[in-house]
Image (cartoon, rainbow, N blue to C red; front, side):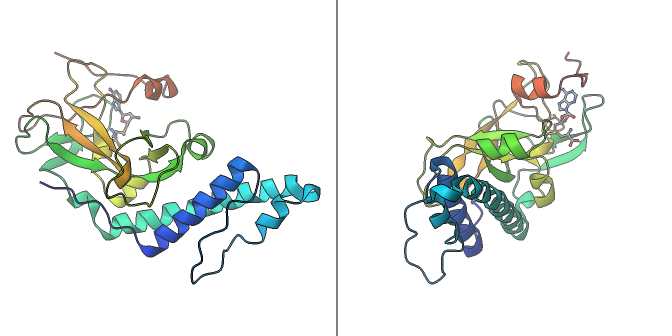
Length: 241
Ligand SMILES: C[S@@+](CC[C@H](N)C(=O)[O-])C[C@H]1O[C@@H](n2cnc3c(N)ncnc32)[C@H](O)[C@@H]1O
C-alpha cells in the first residue's frame, strides 16, 4: 500500500513562509531579508523597521515573538484542516484500535491482517513545531517526534526546511484521525515490533513493522527514555512473556 503525502493548501504554504520569516527575525533579532515580490503585501511589514530602531528594539523583539506564536497557531490549524480534508486516518493497513494488552495503557493498535516485516502500517501526523516552540508551548506529557532537517528533501511539501521540526501528536493526530498515535511502548526491546521512521519532507513519520506481525498482534514502538522520564510516576504495567 502506498501512502501519498498530504497536499498542502495555498493558505498553509503562505502562512508557513510567513512563519519562517518571523522565526528568522526572532533568531536574528533583526529584520529578515525582503520577501519575494508577490500579490499580497507583507503582513508583518510594520515590525521590521522597529527591529532596526535602537529605541524600541526590545519592544519589537517581544512583538515578533508574540506574532510568531499567533502565526504558528494559524499554521497548525490550517495543517489540521488539510489533514482532516484528506481523511488521513483512512490511509493504513488493516489495523484496529481497541483496548491495549498492556493493563492500564488505554487504547492500543492491532494488526487485523498479517503485516510483513518492513511494511509501513500507517503514518503519524500532528501539529508542527520548531524545537523551541515545542519546548515552550507544549505540555510536558505531550508526544513529540523529531523530524530532523538533514533528511531527504526531494519532492518535499515545503520549499525548504531550515531547522529541525517536532511533530506533536498528542492532540493534532487524534483530531485528524491518524491511527499511529495509538501504538503503545512495551518498554521491552524483545516485545517491540515497530519503529517510527521520520519523513520530514512530508511532515510525518511512518510506523514500520520491524518483523512479521500476526493477525491480532498489538503494534509496539519504543518511545525513547526521554518520553518516560517526562511521564515519571505513571506505571509501566506491561508483563512480557
Ligand atoms: C501515544 S499514546 C498511545 C495511545 C494511548 N494508549 C491511548 O489510549 O491514547 C501514549 C500513552 O499510552 C500509554 N502507554 C503507552 N505505553 C504504555 C506502557 N507500557 N505502560 C503504561 N501506559 C502506556 C501512556 O498513557 C502513554 O502516555
